[in-house]
Image (cartoon, rainbow, N blue to C red; front, top):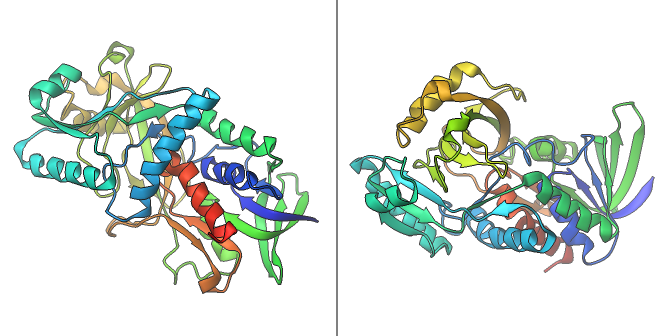
Length: 372
């Protein structure tokens, strides 16, 4: 049994960002991660995009923290040598009926503070990405890509340098409220049990965040905090398309996500994805039969991509609060005193732009702990 000032459950990008930011003020910090490596789930199974803050509703946490977070990420990448590229992206309209929506996204981007985003015509779209078929686009120069694993490692290195402990293979199975904080019990895969006492408990458990909140005594269903896993698959484009785009290319967003878009990693692979499929179990297979649907989606703006050019890549799962027919749901970042759980800070529904917003989310958590 050890006494810790702040116990963080979850060693993904947000949990480790919290550890780094909180450790800057001193005090003891411990991160419990159920996997044998950090950042193995949502944090690294995504497109690795540094989002510019174009889409999110006015006044939302997603809008505010994406804008702050993107600058924190770019600064961290420059400072710590995290591989990244500010490649920019184009959101395209492919038919006249989409123009009004594209213009609305531009207005929202400006409201959110992304004033560098500009509308461009078909000729300018073709100049930037000659293979794209579109009648107009929205150019976002502050969108980029980052090596997610290296970003996660940067947070971990900072946290550990400042004295935080990152403890792996620790699956939390019991949480108890104490008069002076929280008691947490975790078990290794071999069955060994670790117990920690903490004044503050930060629930940064990603896909497990609803379960952790329930273990801490919250009525997850009654409070609307039950996450709905949403799987997204990625396909890899054939090597002949390696130079098909110098910028990320996105269609107009839809209800559950940003649509099947073209992105690339720092090794030069070109990817199409993700789609959106709400699932009842966590699985990471990619069905090769989906190539036809992905090909159809991509050909709306890149007509030279054939179904045969797509091979299964990887899959990720988003911890969404928003169900298939639900309106927009924001990040939940809240201290749980109103729900009878003082000292518990829940981070629930941290889907996109969680990677981009990671350090800004951590700063918000630190403010709650410091009482600012």
